[in-house]
Length: 132
Image (cartoon, rainbow, N blue to C red; front, side, top):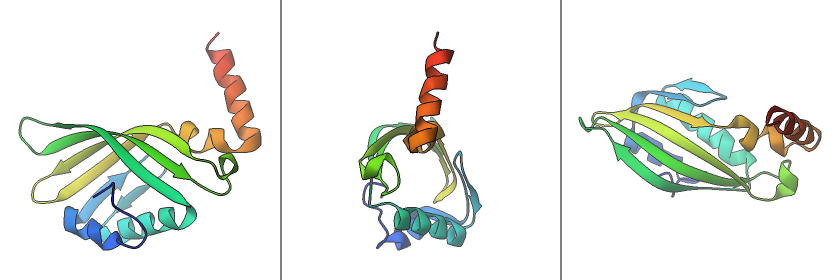
């Protein structure tokens, strides 16, 4: 579903997420299918391209939890001169009949802050100094 999801088929979310879904990423925390659908609609409205390449799926022994390791490729007209940005991440999904908890882990700097012209240069400088 994540590889097919776009602004025109957000109704797919209700097929895999429970009405009381709890979603969290480094920037947002959302509870409920309607707020989650709005979150995705806003995200897709502001990007010109987005896709997920799922590299690996690990399912727990009890079959009620999964880890998805992915690369998100997206472009935004105000970031990185509109060119593609790649972000490595991981999603933890907890489910029974449908997904009731979804938490994303990724580097916000890689996704956003490093892509802003002045701020990106400053973060690069800080990373360089921290690595010495």
